[in-house]
Image (cartoon, rainbow, N blue to C red; front, side, top):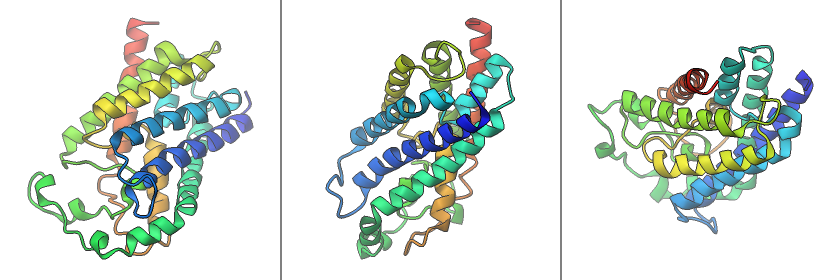
Length: 264
């Protein structure tokens, strides 16, 4: 596959991933949405279907990595780094496009939610913050969760460990069961398998941090949140933003190391 195919495929695929994944979060949390309060099961299955749709849509173009952690794991497995920057660029751009599309699709709901006094006037939950209160703990705005992840209990090492463990499971599943015949991306059976693994990770490991398990999925929409003209949107919680980047990359490297030691 050519570099242009990779870039186009990853941009389209990651945009669809974020549109459907961020879309289900918006549907569940925003006021005046028909799916409001549908709950965690709806979110986890929505993200799983988002992965499956994006993989089947773009697998033939780019191998449908859709995640820098997956790209890193495959690169370490094969010791092939030639197209890694192209994958990363397409994934980040696609994630930003997908986040903008979520905003457009739910434009009225965002405005209704962010002009509701009950929402913008909610005090911060001090009990959910471990240790002394600081400004970084209250930096997340009331709709940031539609765009990117955040912890329920703010503990750097636990949050980092959760993202490492979740991504290790995801990438090891991709490397052992999900790759196509070329070994460079996800195949048809692998797309379904990985979608179900993402649902499983969300159900089992998503509670502490919201399971980013994908640096582009978190960083791209967080940038869009910071740039969009949303009223009363609050902060983008940049003090936390390194964890859903570093954690998944470390988890992917560990998964590739385990694969090369145990399965190769």
